[in-house]
Length: 326
Ligand SMILES: [Zn+2]
Image (cartoon, rainbow, N blue to C red; front, side, top):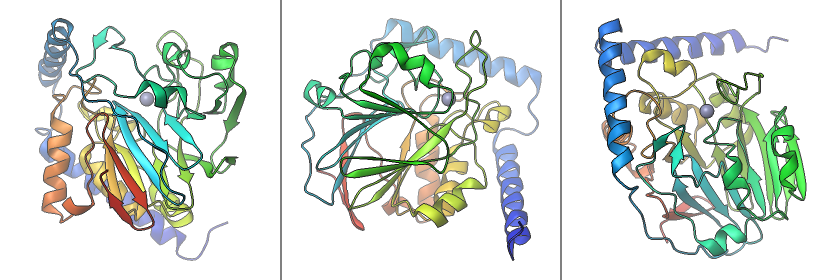
């Protein structure tokens, strides 16, 4: 069924996506020549080799207490892992505590207090990639927890013995203590890896508690779904990935900071918290570039007061329309 104005809306989204492509082409030195690709591949290799001999940077780890009813604490654990703490729930999103990913050593260590890890009651997995569904990390989490995954992923965790395993399709919801989790669409290939090529979907989640709605996008490219998620589910806080944009083909599955800023505007969220940067190289771009570019973009567009950059182990407290660092 075509709703009134739907064609206009589709045209606007297509136009916006074209504008983003154009801006990226200008930035990424015009057409991507094979020699440029080789240079970038060498840069990635050099970064990875350098990482092998330097230990990951460690951050202070503090326990995050359960907040008052109506509040939600958002804690950046590192890479794409986030902890959400409400009065009655402790939620880990895409937990990854490993030091290596596919042989590459991380730059920033995961930061999560042992007591908070043991207190985890709900685990949300956005897709089956090894930095999101990491079996050694899941083995360290309490088995009494419930784990929520996209369709076709249940078999990957079946042997771990979690109390409850729930598969959600986009649009479906699940209640847990004082939070409601709704799965939403994402544009990302969720195949587990080069050996396990079975097709698996990806999703994001809206975690809703009395105080605020937190959108965990998972991995995704820029797509028309952001505007729809904003209209239907009203996220207050958007946790958006910002790395993996060189070479340009990577933007079929990932977002650059420029894409993430547009997604944030489409969502109509109040606060942007960047994730999935700084620990592992996602694309060929230098590992520190995505955050610096994001800060620049937010400064140019008057969004700096809505950007909340958390270092591993840091939290912000969201309640109603206000946000504060603890
Ligand atoms: Zn992924």
